[in-house]
Length: 233
Image 1 (spheres, one colour):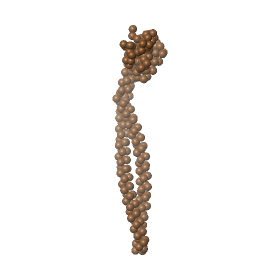
Image 2 (spheres, one colour):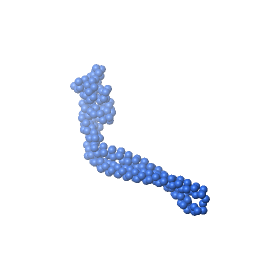
Image 3 (cartoon, helix red, strand yellow):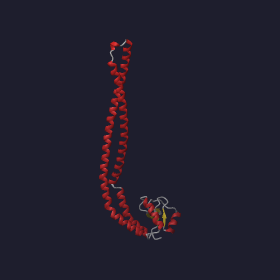
Image 4 (tube, one colour):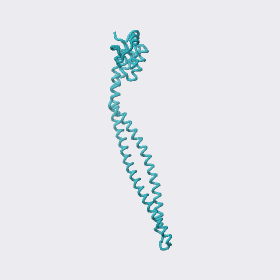
C-alpha cells in the first residue's frame, strides 16, 4: 500500500490541527466558557433568593397580623375601667396582659430576626446581581476577542479543508475513515512510523504477530492508542 498520500494528507492536516488547537486553548474562549458558567450560577442563585424573599415576605405578613391582633387585645385591656371590675376580673385581666406582653415581646424578636434575614438577603442579592453583571460584561469582551481570533484564521481553515477534500479522493476509504475517527478524538499525529518495533505514537512495543502483519499489509492499527502505524522503507 502506498502510504505517501495519507502522509501528505496528514502533513497538510497538521496545520489545521494547530489552528484548531490554538482556538481550543485560546484564553478568551476559556473566559467565555467560565463567564457563561458564572452567569448561569448567578442566575440560579437569583431565582433561589427571589423564592427566599417571597418566603420572608409571607412570614413577615403573618407576624404582622399576629402582632396587630395582640396589640389590639392589649389596647382593649387598657381601655377598660378597672374601678368597675371585680377583683377576680382585674386578676384575669392582669394575667391576660402579662401573656399578651410576652407574646408581643416574642413577635418583636421575630421581627428583628426577619429584618436581619431580609437585610442579609438583600446584601446577597446585590452581590449576586453584581457578579452576574460582571460575568456578562467579561463574557461580551472575551467573546468579541475570540470571534476576532476565529475570523482571522477562518479563511485559511476553509482553504486547507478544500485541499484536504481533494487529497482524500486519492486515499483508500478504509484508511481515511480510520484516520478521521482518531482525528475526531484530537489524536495527532494519527499516522506514525514503526520505531524500534514500537508504535511511533504511544511507544508500546508490537507483538511478533503484529510486526509480521505490518510487514505484509504495510499499515496496522495500534492496539493501544489506535493510531495507524506504517513501516518505513
